[in-house]
Structure formats: structure tokens, C-alpha cells
Length: 119
Image 1 (cartoon, rainbow, N blue to C red):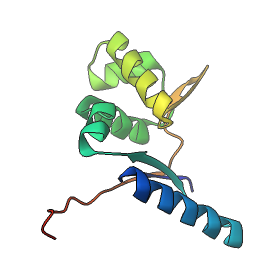
Image 2: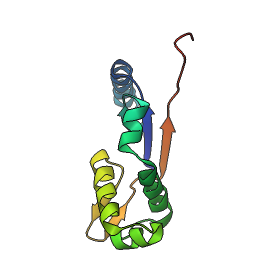
Image 3: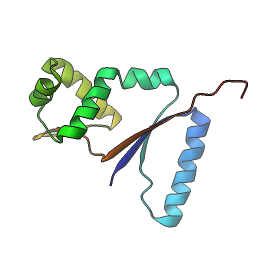
Image 4: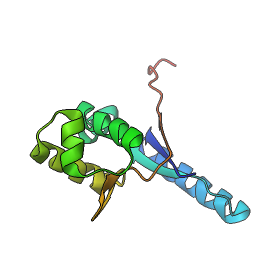
């Protein structure tokens, strides 16, 4: 089962986690999942807007569909769907071939913690 974890981590923490995952995977040979990391909440929400979250959710339910069918299912303009799908493809969340667009992950998990400086 392919899993994508979307995280918010600063650059140093992201590098440390990536190194640790590499070492663990090297030692065990087990699939560790796939990760998409953003440096801040604003970066995450710029890249994955509410409309794009809606597309991700809809595609997980529908499976592979054409852009036109996705536009029909979401009641949005096909050109806007095309733009959002291209952005999600650049992030690696959506795949597209001649039969349509789809999410290659069976599970998408978002993981971030916001803490006060006093903590």
C-alpha cells in the first residue's frame, strides 16, 4: 500500500528525518512511505488550496477519471481543474496518463504540530 505523508518541518528537521528514514530503509529494506514536506503552514496552504484538497478527496473516491468528468463531479470549470491538477502533479500527489488522472496513494496522511515559543 502506497502512503503519502504531508508534513510541515523546518529545513534542519526535514533533513534529519530524511537521513533517519534512509538509514532505517537501508537496514530493514522495508517501505517507509513517501513524504511531501513544507517549511511552513503558509507554504502548505499555498500549494494545496481548499479546492485542491477537494480534488484530492474526490479523486481518492472516484479512482481514475478524465479531467472533464472530474470537473463535472466537482461542478467546476475544466480549465480550473486542469490548472489545479497540473499543480498537484508537480507536487507528486496526482498522476495522469492517457486514460485520466488519479491519486497513486491508498492513504494520505497530514502531520504537523504547531507549538508556542514558550513550550
